[in-house]
Image 1 (cartoon, rainbow, N blue to C red):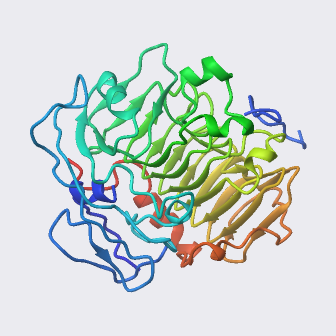
Image 2 (tube, rainbow, N blue to C red):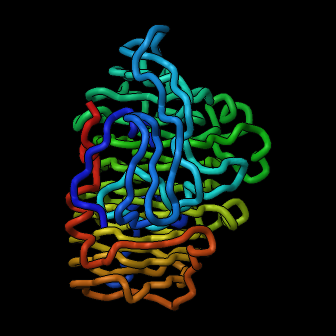
Length: 416
């Protein structure tokens, strides 16, 4: 096990750095990586090199300069520069007892033309303090590290801001906040909507560039008028890590419409309702089947309601999460879902799982359930995540202390 403290410099982090059937509303109630253990870092600060005693070590050249000459990312940009080096490589494995920044899980899987998820590593580094600056920096496909300082509030008429490929979006310090809008990782842009219709249906996959290689870290999302983070339309290789999500109108982190290779790790979900949706519609099997691979690990599900996650068609690896005071269910099993759950700690929930047309759940005996009213369904037929990466999960008994101390925004120190 690692020691309990987490202290990573800003530069190093940048390098690493509904619907009924359509889920539009609340769902009816039918009843009323490696545990690196002894890893070490080498190289000068910002070198990005990390090596551990177990598999899944990462290497990279660091993010490059965090300040320099040249134009910024639009109004409100305060620094710019260029960087070099990859953030993370390899397939990843296991978890970590200290909120370690190493990427593990499906977002580190080599597929669809990418070896792993590196975000904006190697690109320009900009710091933004306004919505206009963020919008100017985020939408293209040029590699870029976007550092958010302070609170950025969106215009009243904006629900979601489109995110392009090859971006690291990372908050500085402990107070970086997105207020009133969400981030849409979605290549189906407004011009395509105007030309071809609202949705990126299966027969439209060849009409547009699919967004990929996106990292979102150390941000707090509040007052979202739609989803806080939406991954859709064949987007792939996305890492959502060390963020805090508070109540939003819709989902906190939704993954749907043929998207793939996503890791959601070390986040804190506070009193959210439709928390994490994987697969949006029972009729979307032709687009989703064989895709929607997502790893959910070391998240704190804190007084949430449901969808922790809810899965359709996808393969979800749910490990080392802490779920406490859940008013409905932890895992929802929809049509075509396949879920492997291990090493989670569940304390005071209405039910551990709930059927919505699916039953394929492997709930291993490494999970701990302290109190539940109804238990759940489990047939042992969930997929085997070791077909994709090695697993060394933390003991479930340690998860409350680990996750409560390390999950969420502001827990990665040295970010000023």
